[in-house]
Image 1 (spheres, rainbow, N blue to C red):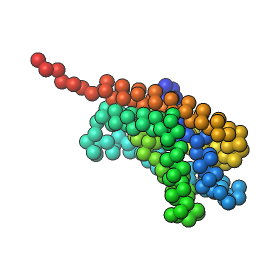
Image 2: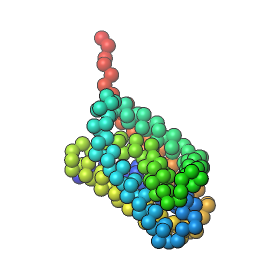
Image 3: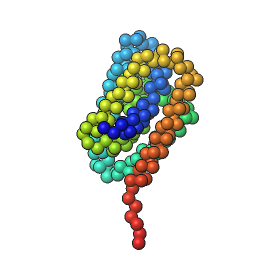
Length: 211
């Protein structure tokens, strides 16, 4: 068991899922619901997101091979994408985009469907999280290692579920200032992880030497 890889995966996934940042959005999506209804929405959304992310964790390398994409190239592309998400987090752009997505969903779909969209997709299992999972799956090659990655995903989703269940209390505790500080701190961490993905990707590319 490679603890460094597991810690890297844990940090990457938990930052991208961003439980404290999703708490106020979840409250807005479930406005007017009682505690039991919010619990059901959180549970269903987290289960759907966990299944999707676990699926990409298991089949990530196969998808890349099928498309003829090398892991190094995907690490560079994924790292750049994650860096952009980190940029949005640091400068408060990602929260605005998530809130816009949530508002759009409320006007277009009935509130009973919000567990699927936009909670599970794309607020939890969005392009950034899916790209990160495929990136991480390249470092977890064997079936046991992939099972460990799935375990990390389920652990992160469990943290998210617990956060959503206590979202009302957490939102009151953090306040607007606390959410802003935490989101920007997580953005800086994600930016560093994204740069490391790019460095690993560049380092894995074999450049033929000319005589």
